[in-house]
Image (cartoon, rainbow, N blue to C red; front, side, top):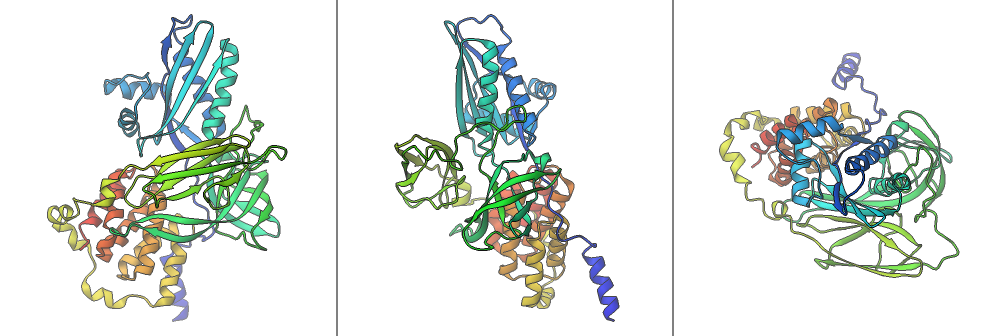
Length: 478
């Protein structure tokens, strides 16, 4: 009997290796032709040339999936949309969703007398917000290309690489990001562990997970899918552990070479430190600096450099922006968050139940609830969900549905993994399959606290199959 039970378990889990890392997903972006402004220019194609320089720099970095120019022209012409111009956030969102991209880069090329000025804006399609804005000036077109490459490096810093620690041996740490993700020797990563889960007080939706700094790693050798580095510092002995999160703190390239960038990771010791003050509306919003380890506090001392400030609050859209701090400067930043109506009061909650009653047949029979697993079984589900292996997540979702698991300790982890992975799933079949089963697991629970999460997936998921299963699962909630 024990042998038969062992064979059954192997079949149930599909012989999936628990340690296999999830595949890195590139950020999908589109670069529009830059608009010509000011005096008449000698080269009327300068707007498209600047866009090509940006595209080349982004592709060389290795971490971006850039929409091919001809495909971009074809899609926009079919929709009768122009390919050039300085977009506002609303127009960028419309074009971005049409192209299936997360970020759009647009801007202008202006000539005033003998000076050329390029202004670029980076727009987040999902939030309809400007991530960053950069500008450069040059008196010659040849020098302008070098400046565009430098500008692209600044833009790239707004997209830190994020992954996981997959091995720790003494001072050596291996992460699940390699050359395919754009990692290069000499890059540094901050390491975090997950702390308190932050939930919306009304919908129960998981809004964020606290990140607790555990140390810093510098990369020494890089392979295709993994990189190995050494521990530079850590909060305590062996604080950096398997499964913790990593986020790059220095990014950008120039023809494959590391740029001489001044950053928080490499402070100028001889310069006086500045102070950063961030005020928010609402006043009790949470403030974080994403590219350093220490927790933000009002008026904290920081070395001269650029800091990625995040301000978030339940019921509001999260604001992220880069703030430049000069040596000895007292920098004050005021952030007013915009309300997020869907999160505050989801008015469509009863509609899916009324319009899609047939989906209720997919819910497990009431008698299945009696077979809910004991605490030992619950920890098994949680381990599978957090393994970082897409196949394990899929198997966990299937088991939770089949066994009628109702325990919120397990379902909350399902929700966390779904929120972390559904936007990044893209067109990856394995990722879409895993996220779909997590939707089914939440739907089969019948627990209305997960309605806000499933609504978000149904509206924002990049794949139609995932949207469909999220919508069906909504109809099973009470």
